Image 1 (tube, helix red, strand yellow):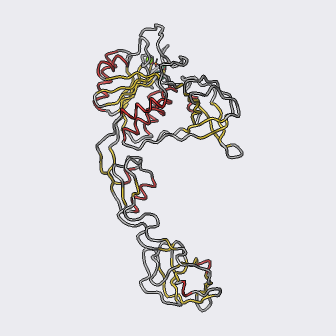
Image 2: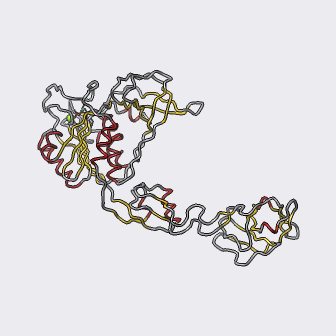
Image 3: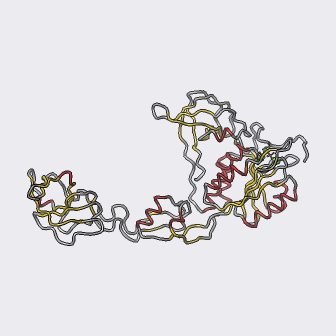
Length: 422
Ligand code: AMP
Ligand code: MG
């Protein structure tokens, strides 16, 4: 392919007044991407990380009936003596799953286990550590107890008709437990989006092949595969596509026939060997964005039939940054999930950081808690957009907003922990 020098946008260009902000790029993504409509009904174990389709309302109270929160003795508070000690007759035992069937009368008590139904005629559970068994088998309890003590009331966790899981929620392990507690065995969830991805570049060699001069191993497909594997999507890896218009057009058309979202890396600048834009213009619609972000400035966004296309830059760090900031939200919207912004934490910078105002920078950081339990963050050495080890050593992005013009040690900065499963 040609080695001509290019004058168009590249990742290292300084501030460009034509670029859009990160927030504006996100707004356009949210506006353009449509959620998948189709659903499937699955056993709840298979619903982990999937998107709930319709709000789940509880068919009954949880717990369904009052039960004991402790091992001890079920008593009627009226049987106790204010300021003194009552001696009660133990008339039976209530087990979790095996209730005491009789009635507890004044002067009596029932031995009770955690989770057992509260016997008729009792209104409190006294912990066994607060009761004393006499030699003759009587149960001695003081008067310092109140009605409802150690009783889990019906509906204390969930009341019948309460919404327990919202539509658009991504199901967590706790959600699966809540569904089970309601007796719900199956749930309707959105189908998984299909995401196809490929690398572009004549310099790229796949693993297992020898590295000829001028070639490099394709790393983007591996980091992309890793990030996508953490999300509830079906993945189609389309390999490396050479830098020519026909191959690119063919790859895009093939990807569009099977995927909801197509991701490519490389070839989105306007160099002689950058064919993403012309190929997309032939078979779809395209918006070419310069985003005020570093790394990751050039990004192509478009559509081929019903499929969304996101052309990420080629540099390996830029791929991971733009994936985390733009592709992940696009997948959230596509999945039908309620969009959540990644959490930012304040941290004290340990290093100085050079930065020009006018764009948002995502430096790679290692965050830890200091001796006062406050976050502190240092850089992972060289920050070039091709230095992928700066990502693998890091646990967070240091997010420097548009107006920031540099950081000195001791300054407060925002950090965003890596979360490839959002
Ligand atoms: P491009 O945007 O295609 O000009 O690529 C920018 C830089 O990223 C070039 O140095 C490419 O060699 C490099 N690059 C592109 N794709 C990959 C990839 N899949 N793996 C590793 N480096 C890549
Ligand atoms: Mg290239």
